[in-house]
Length: 275
Image (tube, rainbow, N blue to C red; front, side):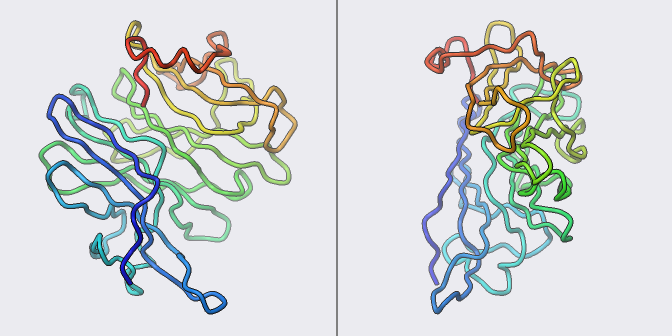
């Protein structure tokens, strides 16, 4: 069966090296349900300017053709969905080469029942042939009923890679944000911890999407998200957008820098870099 067109497409452009990277999700396995064939697994493909697309693999299994990937022998491996954003390292750090592109994957199938879908970080150094990957991170079901969702990624000024993910509330807990870091250029991700304010207080539940921004003036990292004004609900609809500064040494959210914003202000590209 010929595969469908890709969806959830994300892209990033390296203007220094004139290379564009694109990422998209596509089905890799089909199952019959009530006499119909439905998608039962997806993978993520990466395209680089001038090169054919390749499947991003965190398991040591064969590549699948981007044109005919629906294969019963391969459909159980390297299943994943797209994260929110890719980034490119703008300079050399201790463990990072300038031009390295990073992209988080989510919806990684959990190996045990007590866990839910996880995340993995894919990366490729400029000039390399192959994509590499970090360790795969899962979180227990009691902390998030849907695992780690919608990972956003930023490269901090100290060379640390920061990922923030959403976790849906359970019957006993509210929705939370979790973060992971890599201090070795993406080889290893830390176990997810709950993201909190600088003073240790809890972030209210989220409602919708989120992203990182960098201010061109002060070179600080900011996080844009929609959070609730309540803390005792599972996933609240009483929410507003806030732009919050990230303390790059912790990392935590600096509460005093929380700003209720008009989203139109972010259209000023002379001030903001939106990841």
